[in-house]
Image (cartoon, rainbow, N blue to C red; front, side):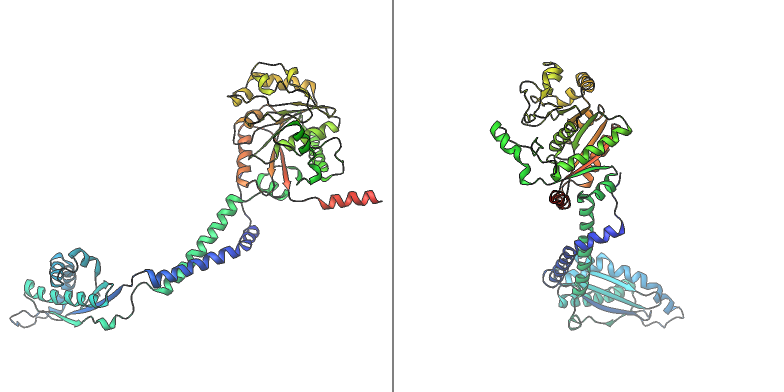
Length: 466
């Protein structure tokens, strides 16, 4: 399962982040300009030209017809002599050891043309006067060494390096630094925007779920209104630390949340009409995506639809034992049964809803994965199938192995997606984990969607009025 972008989406991403791209690009451009003007030490380049013009010896012997051809052949030899350590050592001594022989090697560049008798010496230095002095010293020392070593006087200084000619440094070139910095800023900002969109794209709509996850969207649940938080007060009275936004027997059936869970129930029932699906696993990619609320509320609407339903809290890794509100059994839980300390009938707890039974998680075990994969878990599910129309299991998020274990034991799996929070790549990885164990993916539920379903509320207000 791969995440891909169409050209239109690609352009939309960059359009949304255009201000970021412009700011980053301008920041890089300004930084490049400031660096080139104030931080980079300017480098000057001097040039001295030598002419290899004739091959007369020191005794002024007459020129032969091959003298010019010999001069051209000597050009390559002269280049090696100029670059030699002997010449560099002499130049360094002449400069009072201001630079070492290796320093001069890095500063010197020699260029010639195959059809020319000109040898050009280039010296780079931060001081234009020193650059000129080094170039001229190399030229004069080389001229003297050719005479001494080869008994020839065919090298003349054509052009001397002059400090006055070195007004502009060869680097840095502010305009080039500025342009390059701008291009780097553009590349960096665009790459950052693309990678950020690729790895941090969040699922927010039906289109996102169907496109990136390629599974059916069973339904969307909006953000609960304040009037849907009655369970908070109930749990305060019971001394429970956390509370759930749950449907109660007094919750109006016309509320958008109630209708959302009805939609999920309808889509699941449609799948049940196509294939056998008596047990359902509820999981998510991350903690806090709302899988527990979704699982319990789904169980409630199933029970309201006269389906004998049992909801199992199989999250055996959480710090507290979240028992189903209104249940009448507080002694045993799932771990008690799996560990062999209780029987199936002992862990079934009636609730305030007709047709709905709950099984709490029980004490935290040291080996939850082993317990869930045990034969007793298979036996429990088999017994529950004979007693109930629907089994809904609330499991841990997918970064534990528990959902993958349970997925092999149930008829369908529902992935809860936290709208605008769950990242595409995380949800895709969760689905891949389930597919790796050949789990049946029933679909996804988009939870906490930032859509208060005003159109639905307006519709019910209209019906009530007329």
